[in-house]
Image 1 (cartoon, chains in turn purple, brown):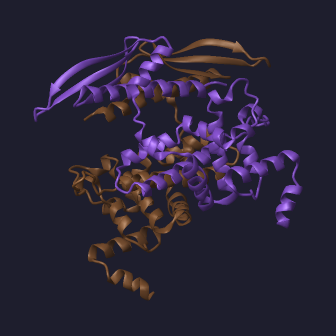
Image 2: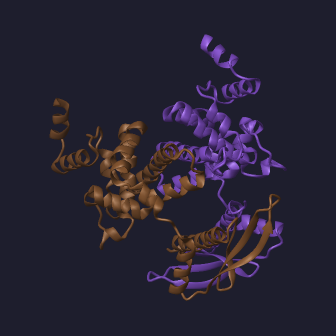
Image 3: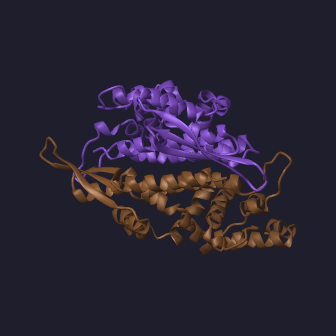
Length: 251
Length: 251
């Protein structure tokens, strides 16, 4: 208790606020505050160094993303002992999706602690989720793998993630794509490009997903409905992948 | 020593061979042999179960891929304290690339232990690298994170991966793209789309990478050369991403 009082008393006001926030959100006291402060530092407030490197949370985000990915992988591996790797991969990607991590960051109140000079609504960006990942990296550096694993499972997954709901939310890429088209004034079409028969007399359908009459995705399956979903998923991934690349090339 | 003799003596011939191989390759004795046996079981020999699930190494590959990713992430994070996350991401993806893991699996001799009914040269497939990842998953289940981390760093990275060489192999996306164009009879062009000046009088160049007169990538940087690389990388990622999606939709 004395050492805890020392820990808090030797810190500045904003440090104390951060220490208390970590205790409130995650239930522990940090040993070393530096990585947590860095985790909350968006590149918009980073100081430029002579060699052009910047001090911001992006390296920690890289680390935290990996640690979070492996904790969630093991959690799902053990929770679903007879599900195949396709299922595990899909559910993990829903748990660690940017939108889910953004929500989490807001729910936990981490969002409010982020230091950023970003002008605009940061909730509409990936800033909250990135900071959440960076925070996981900070916990790992401060406390090690086992501790971080317990925090992620007991304070994040168990309390804030409804896995059954994530599973049952079937991702309907066709409606996502159509909705996106309406919002962005693009024409979305699905065409049956081909219909063929396999050796064992089953029909196979090939469907194309078009955006403004340009093919963005192709799907092949035994039902038109599934082929459409596959085509829509491919088109959706192209769209979201392009957006991500666009962001990366910004200086 | 007695318990070790017991461990070996109670196992069948092929189990003993596996125990000895693990000791020779990684320097430790397994506690529980089951996950290692599963890690070496390619889906081509898997037994079908009534519910359609199969017993093969794919779930363990999912787990091992995640554990390996996080150990390598931390290793690089600490080894390169001033490199940015773009560098860390790139070097990690080179370390865990399928071709690198395939090589590793062969170098370690893990390749020869894989049980598969695959007809043909398995070295030309991802089977060796997949089994390597599954093996990492098995070590984790048997021995925990810290132990697995030490094995990956001391027995794999330090002994078998030449990180300096991986770094110096500069990925030249412009030449990759031009080479691809020649092979596939596509016209590749790089256009300077825009040239502007920042507030502090630095020039910024925006370059587009075109395939058959269609823009596939855009790059922005302080030199034309770097902007071209960024544009070429984006175009390259679009190409390879499309190919990956095509494969997925094949029945």
